Amino acid sequence: MNDNKNLIEALAASKIYQDYERAFSAATGLPVSLQPIESWQLPHHGRRKENPFCAMIAQNSRSCAACLQVQQKLSETATHEARSVICSLGLCDTAVPVRTGDRLIGFLKTGQVFRKKPTDAQFERTAKLVAEWGVPTKPSELKAAYFDTRVLPSKQHEPVVKLLTIFAQHLSMVSNQLIVKQENSEPPMIARAKTYINENQSEDLSLGMVAKAVNASSYYFCKMFKKATGINFTDYLSRIRIEKAKNLLLNPNLRVSEIAYEVGFQSLTHFNRVFKRILGQSPTEYRAQLPAA
Image (tube, rainbow, N blue to C red; front, top):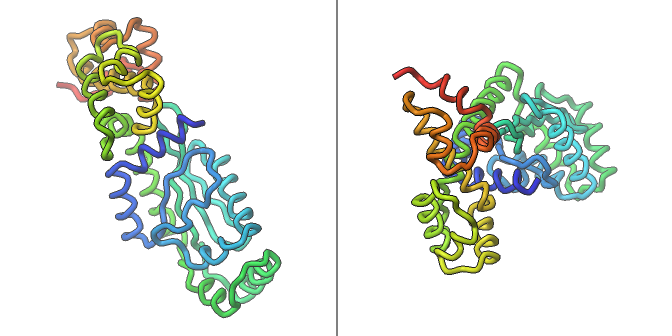
C-alpha cells in the first residue's frame, strides 16, 4: 500500500498532473484530485473549486465521516472503470481508476455536484440532517450555498467523466517516465545517484554500490532516496531499465533476450515479469503494437 501511495504522490507532484488539474478546474469549474487507493482524507477539501456547501459540511467530524464513507464506496467500486455515487445530502461524486501497468494505484476524483436541480423539500431534509450532525452554520448561508451548487445533468456529466478517463489512461502510459524523470528540487546526493544509476544501469548494481558512489551509508541513502523519489531504489532501477528496454524494442533486429541482458537484467524471466508489472504488457506484446518502421 505504501508503494501505491508513493507512486501517487510522485505523479501528483509532476508538472503534467498539476497542469491538467488547473486546466480541468478552469474548464469545468469542478475540483479534481489524485488519491491513492487507501486514503482517509476528503479529496477536495481546501482545494481549487471546492464546493462552498461541501466546505461548510466538512467542518464537523460526523459529516466528514459520512463523506469518507462515500469515498470508501467509490474506492471499492471504481476499480476497473469510472463510478459515481450519490451521498446522503444528494450530491454526486465520481472516481476514475488510475493504473501503472496492471496495478491499480489510485483514483482521479471529481464531483460535489447535483445531477438534477434540487428542490425545497430536498433542502429541508438536508438541513435537518446537517443539524443532527451538529454542523456549525447559519441556515441562510447553508441554503444559499446549497442552491448555488453546480447542477450537472447527464449530457454534461458524461463528457467530464470521459475527460478524467482519458487523462487516467494517459497517466498510466507516462507514469513510468514521470517517475524516473522526476526532479522536484531534489538533494544533490540524489541527483548524483540518479546520474550514476543511468550511467551504470546495465551493470549488476546494488544499493550499496550506489550509496558508496555518493559517499553515503546504505541506510541513509535508502531512506533519502525513497523520500526524494517516492519509490525505493530497486523499483527505480527497474523502471530505468524498462525505459531503456522500450527504446531497444524499437529495433526489430534485437531479440528480447538480448535486450533483457543489455539493460541489466540477469534473466529473461525476471525481465518479462518486471516489464509486465510496470507497463501492463509483455515485451513481445509491447513490440507488436509499435508502429511499423
